[in-house]
Length: 499
Image 1 (cartoon, rainbow, N blue to C red):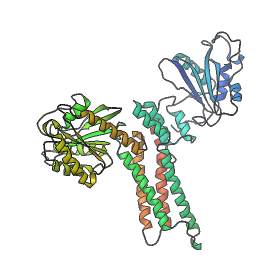
Image 2 (tube, helix red, strand yellow; image 1 turned 90 degrees about the vertical axis):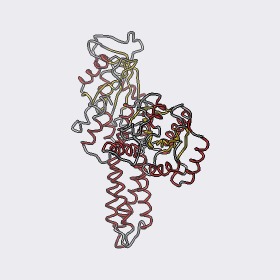
Image 3 (spheres, helix red, strand yellow; image 1 turned 120 degrees about the horizontal axis):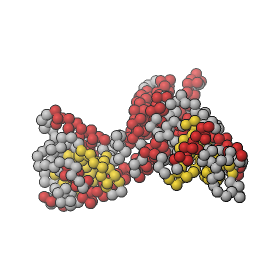
Image 4 (tube, rainbow, N blue to C red; image 1 turned 135 degrees about the vertical axis):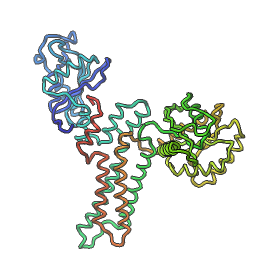
């Protein structure tokens, strides 16, 4: 991909292939304004029909430069013009939008022709642009130019793809948040902080013989610890998301025969899971997309967690259940209300340690077979006394059989998902999260090594500075300040042409 000449003028259809009221042809490059001027003319006040066939393009003055002059230095100019589509189609009425400076999307002079959304007309205009010196754009080349010119970083470029591919309001919201700098801003703050620390360290090294201290060991350690904690918090946020899917993952866990499969069927209003009185019916995890109030979640029923492993299949199903639990954003710990609650509380404690970043709800099932008030009071008292559960675990009484309590449980799930989204404060697309997770881990490792060095009796400024540089480089990989051709090719090759 990077063997393309980024100084060429490129052209592509930037709207969809289907017929529409408006279609867009986009130009970017050094000759974009010149080509637009050659292929358009100002509308004379006496103009009759919008299309006049058989007339040469050179015989009419352009309205492009007039529009730029009237823009009074603004970054965008626009005018209604006639556009030349060739000898057969002639002139077609349209509107041209001009970005004559580097303040365009791509950081180059750019043009958009807006015509009737008829694909043959748009293709005719592209052919005229090619005849006047443009070439066809490659997939993602417009956004690549924006990245290469510094108009956006790599996480924002990935967000553009996320906006294009969004399958609903929730995915669109995540992509727009990332595009607006949801990850770029905290990354920039982290790098700026490390640059300041490094500058003080290196200044001290330059004046080591004069015994001038630019930053104390306590201040150095404090800055590094704060940065390390922020990096770890980012990792927790990424880990709390389901990397394989942008939908929030709600995982049902519990002992065998607690009613998890029945609850999944009740919440999804379909027979997704096989239900049986025989323990261990679910051997693999089951997944269903479930609409819960205003949010759509991926709800997963896991095999019952039990210490009595009977076979290799049982062991594999247990491992899959634990893995799904670790990736959950909301965990429904399903318990049988007719059985010993104290034993399940200890069980909950062991589960909670696997994913403390998730939101947790204890679902006491089979409320049609016990006294809801007494069982709920017992669980509330025990959770109140359990230090690990303080303020992070809710309780819901339900009957998957009769449907009692399900509306309230749906409200709780919706609320927990929304609270988690708000608390995270940083939305990440799955592709971005997957790419930057390892870089953040390596960044944290370097910071941890630097912090350990500050605890030594003799401060090793050179080694600390080297670890800080490594940490900064890893942050640079995420933002795209450090990159390889292979990395850019992998990202931008996923784009469609015209974006």
